[in-house]
Amino acid sequence: MLPAVLSLWLAFLIALGPVHAALPTISAVGSKFFTSDGNQFFIKGIAYQLISTDPLVDTDQCKRDAKQMKDLGANAIRVYHVDPAGDHQGCMDAFADAGIYLFVDLDDFPTQIQPDAPAWNQSQLAAFSAVMDEFQKFTNTALFFVGNEVLTTAEVSNAAPYVKAAVRDMKAYRDSKNYRKIPIGYSAADVPGLRPMLQNYLSCGDKDAERAEFYSLNVYEWCGDSSYDGSGYSQLQKNASGYNVPLFVSETGCRISKPRLFTDQAAILGPQMADTWSGAIVYEWIQEANDYGLINYGDKVDPKVSTDALDGYPRSGTPTTVSPDYGNLKSQWATLKPTGVKLSAYSASAKITPPACPTSTAGGWIVNGDAPLPSLGQTLDSAATASGGSTTPTSTGSASKATASATGGGTTAGGKEVTGMCLGLLGVMLGFVVWL
Image 1: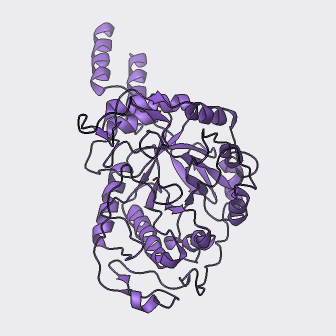
Image 2: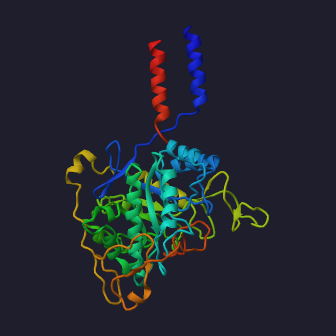
Image 3: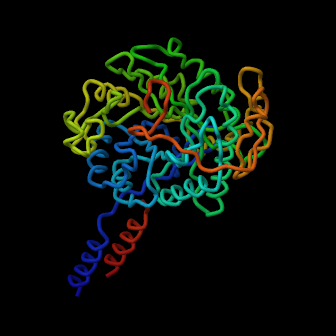
């Protein structure tokens, strides 16, 4: 009797398929990220966009890359463009099994907020919502970006209210669907003329429903064997002092001085910044024409002959490390293990006063931080802001268009750019077998 029952349960387990890791979820508390088991989370991430559409639908490739990223010491990837209609289960399981979280952008080329003619409308909301619907179900989805480098000069700072409106409406959508509170925020270009006004604007005000839940910067200031002061990181830290939501570096990896040493990681993840910053994402995984890659999938080929090789760089295969950059980053991360603070010890003091909203200044930041945000469907009345000052929206608008680049990502700073159900079932069944 018992062998027969065990055989039935074994067959059932095989039918269920492999049991995948369910990582602790990530949340934003005060100015820090925490896992659901109470540990502070520090990012050691990689920008991952093998193709311009969606790199998270090729399970076999994800398995190969996840294994290599685990060797590197990564615990996160950033993906800029995804197709919400794709099947992402296999890739998300592969990365979860390697202990890797997903940081994903909600926008795509046709739906991103444009700086020169900013808009936030129903088409964009629907597209952002579809991405959220798809990825909120995975425990290793860490956070959502509503935009990447929308503002690249102070002259287009009147696009900032549309970024903040997207934050507002995506938070409202998430909560209306009773999804877990996956943090929603923004990835900014590191523009001196926007510091610290943009970061303060996105997290200021007395309406929690409108404030970003994190802020991140694409930073390429630390080149070669620079230093905390020489690179300008000390100024970033000064601007971050007392900030009310988590901060992190969403792109880094200057390549002006080769090889890349990644010594900035010791500052970000070390005693100089780790109390304020939550880690960094290095640009990027795959080697392509911009020469930021940590790995390649073979030698460059003629793209007319090999159709899967965009600009001549293969987009799939066995990852081969780029030396010495890969080894340099691996060595840096291996020595950096910040522990931070336990949630139980931090939560009592986690509520931090938001910064004051910035005011418009002639020739600089042109948004009145206290002005109402645009409602869904409003666009900017350029004539009302031609001389500077607060923005005045009008009532029309449609999703803006953008030209696709090879991998997505920014336009500045170097010209680049699972659930626990199976585990629960397994525990119940094993308990039943023991009872038998």
